[in-house]
Length: 82
Image (cartoon, rainbow, N blue to C red; front, side):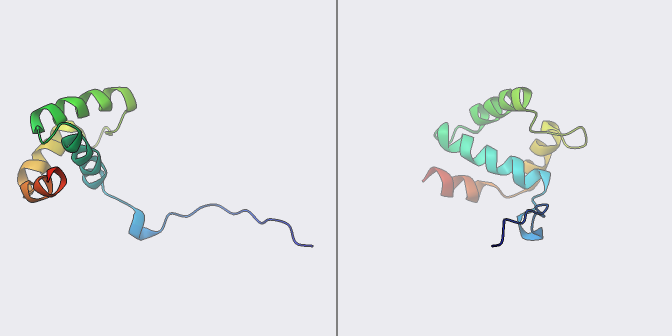
């Protein structure tokens, strides 16, 4: 009879997300919850970051907001809200 064999879980490369992608996922969910109010979603995200440490010392909320400005995110926000 064979038992169970356990090994270390290795995350597939396709599931590894950049800091921006990870924070963007949270941000888009918050935009949906706030009915498209981006300012309120960013306030909530800052509060959630303080409580759950979503950001790292290398990539903070300021970096995320700057990257968000550089990205054409308006299309994604429209998809989420509608």
